Length: 358
Ligand SMILES: Nc1nc2c(ncn2[C@@H]2O[C@H](COP(=O)(O)OP(=O)(O)OP(=O)(O)O)[C@@H](O)[C@H]2O)c(=O)[nH]1
Ligand SMILES: [Mg+2]
Ligand SMILES: [Zn+2]
Image 1 (cartoon, protein in one colour):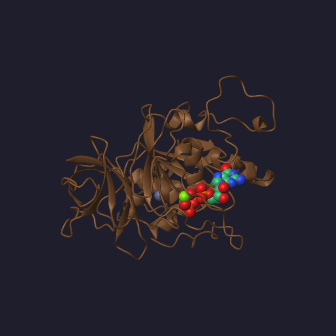
Image 2 (cartoon, protein in one colour; image 1 turned 90 degrees about the vertical axis):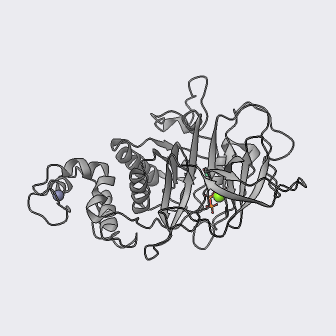
């Protein structure tokens, strides 16, 4: 029986079968995925074969027996020291990194490692800058600068507020001249139309507002959210499972009961989904992954393209004579933050180590 993994609780997987049943499945002990040493052999978004559920209608007692070939997946190393990897999601159209300039601050190294990983696995990415309602003038200037940087690199960027709804819905008429519209509109347009028709992963640090944004887009999701810790201005790792939610047309009225209840009976309300969103637990860091040193520059778009002009084909862009990347860095054609992230991945170091050097 074929089904789609829609939730991973750590101890079992909820699989939605073709006939709409939600079945709690375990993975057979001897079941290992070929080629990937992963803490989770199966991920949300995987299409799997399962044994028939118990005949008592309890929706349990099934096993995942096979994973269908993945179109793609996105993976992160559990930590730099660990050789184990964690598959964040499989078969996605878009990996969205939810970023906050402050409360909490997402580091550029983290952003760049996420982008590099997405490049490596050939998953399209978008950067969603959340909490624009919170920022002061300096932070807004920084936001504009950082969005400018990533747009130049070709990554779609959205500035939104999950709290106020700014930047999310398509508006029928021209926006009024209110304060919010003084900010430059996203050239990419509002977020919802961009997500329509896609299966999108929401990833990012804890507390950046992934679940709040999900709830804004899909109110039926009723995902749990929580305020940041007052002492550290950091998220509290509120979301503990990865879960996929249907993105419903904004106009569909809400069913009386939530889409998911603890026992896991997923009811898809009227109106066919216009895509899916996978909400995931916040992650602290993005360890590097198993690539050769020479390959790292392939995952930094501008370093890769400028690096073609280096004198040596195997240039690491760190000290070599005739290095076009170092020259471009000198001329500010490559952002220092990007180069710093490149070095941190090249050296397979902790994300914080190169923060001060450049
Ligand atoms: N002011 C403001 N607060 C927001 C916004 N988005 C989220 N928040 C708040 O930020 C806090 C964290 O939001 P969550 O949605 O729980 O964050 P998360 O990314 O899902 O966090 P984890 O599940 O821990 O990974 C909550 O108090 C939200 O209300 C926003 O756009 N503006
Ligand atoms: Mg959450
Ligand atoms: Zn070079």
